[in-house]
Length: 216
Length: 332
Image (cartoon, rainbow over all chains, first blue to last red; front, top):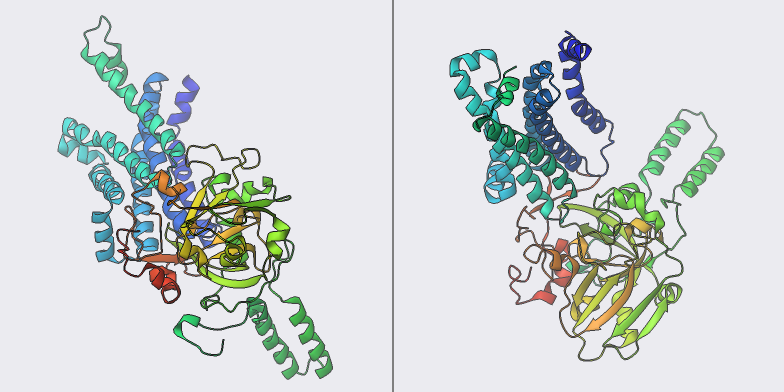
């Protein structure tokens, strides 16, 4: 237990995680340059960056449950970086779409976003994620006050739902939901855990264990 | 054809007669060599012949199935032919998986020998053809068609086959036959994804009789001068260049003539998204994406803007009259 804590607090832990988070991007970049993305590289890039956005949302949502369940407070120090990488991948996703699919034709993109519900939903999720990314530094928490900052960052639950809906709708074309259900199950599990925790908190209990753990 | 019209398109030889890029480039090398005096004239002639003989762009992977030149208007488009590798690794063939890389990985289990096709329903001469009989029924022709997928990408493929009308004439449909239905193989033992809930199996596609009789509707046995690779719908499939790709059934085992419009696979799965006709139409969007443009596989680079999709995939001159007076927004 102690050694795990020590490992996570090591000064190299954050740089290492940073490099790990960048690997999918590096791999995509390399594959694009070396023509290894198959017959339709544009589609492969747009889809992979979208997949990675969803994966990072799942990872960042898993931090708090893992921290509490495994009693590893040190995990908290990685949450911000993981959150920012979610935003990094959603930006590359939006850029890939705008560039490789739409040729940066802004009127075309605007029309497309307004016309197609599944793109509108994805775009809304991106817009909502932007203030979260923009307030991911300590001074912002101070300036906003912890409560308001927390309230704002709870938007991520809604964003996760919108991201899922976006993916579901995209796949609906082909009735191909197997992967969507995997992400939905993971996100449901992670959000369900939170709902259960907050119910526990509200109920008067002899030992307020949930609260103590959460603030540790 | 002596009299050229717009409908004949650009008339050029079959791809096997076009000098491949590698060859004319190597000829230039040869000329350079000759200019520098590095080789004798006789040797240069020999080298040139050698290079020519080696360069027939057949993939050399499967049994040859050469196709003669077709006299059908629109049979040969002038677009650059898509690479064999792209055509055989990027497929929608849901019996072998939903990812476009899946069919190339999984379709090796398909058993295409022996194969037979039952022609039944409202015909005077119902008959089950062996594949060999079907291949011999009419001379094979090479047809270079555009293929536009409903997902917004396109290819140019040199198919080998003959007009479906040749078969239809032989089996003599009754006057009551209004539609032709194409039923694909659905064998869960050799097609791992048959049984998945994505679609109703077997895969069913259909055409109105006049569409099926159109000379461009190709009963297809080969591609690139060889028999069809499994992932492309071996051993026999339909190719309908003016319709979205999913209208062209693959690995066909039954052709049935009916009097009622058949329910087709994608129409059953999502009727508001996939109509019976599914003609390529840039003016009728799919509910979730635009059909105005397409990406030509292997040609339009990552940073190129997508190209405009053509009405009836560019075959309007040939097939437009089939739909005269129809509201194509309603009958999409």
